[in-house]
Image (cartoon, rainbow, N blue to C red):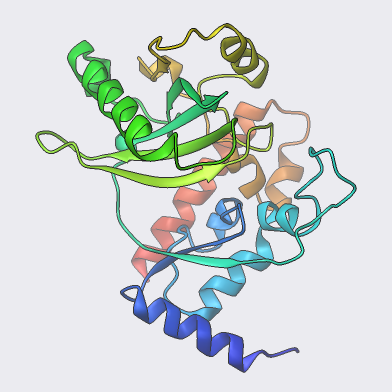
Length: 254
């Protein structure tokens, strides 16, 4: 079995410097599809980090197919970067995904589409959120990011401070989850966007509109996928949710 003591030590020191718990990612992707291994992405040791990275198809895509949708013969970056973020427990209703084309913010979506959050349905709340997000984009993002088309995630703290934090950037394309939009729809919205117009803002407005998390399909262990053959995706994901909840309950009871 291969060992990398110097890398392990660097990872251990990096985790310690960030408070002892981190979220790992590689170049673009976090190993969200490997969450089922520990029922969390929170890592406190090199073993936690390496286990998630090795089990993730999302990370494997970064390694071998990162440029598949680009006009280049390259398939992967020349260098890879292992990134750690300090772990924070956040409320899912405060995360939003923003879509930019021709350096204009034209669409915003609730990031966690599997949840219904009643307060987001209040018109005054949505107006305030959109105003804050647009202001942050104009002040901190638009002139600072070189690409004309991209996606970014933002976290908006609760009233009265409404503190905003830039979470991440993602590529414009089908490898990025469009949340409550579809990619052909986003292309049409971008083409018809008017300068200065308010972005299209979408939330889950009822329990019936909740969507299953796309990464849950990749999280399903092989044995469960085999059990689900012939079933619809939603039925399979419900089974995955049930299995993940069972694993989480078992972990808490240890």
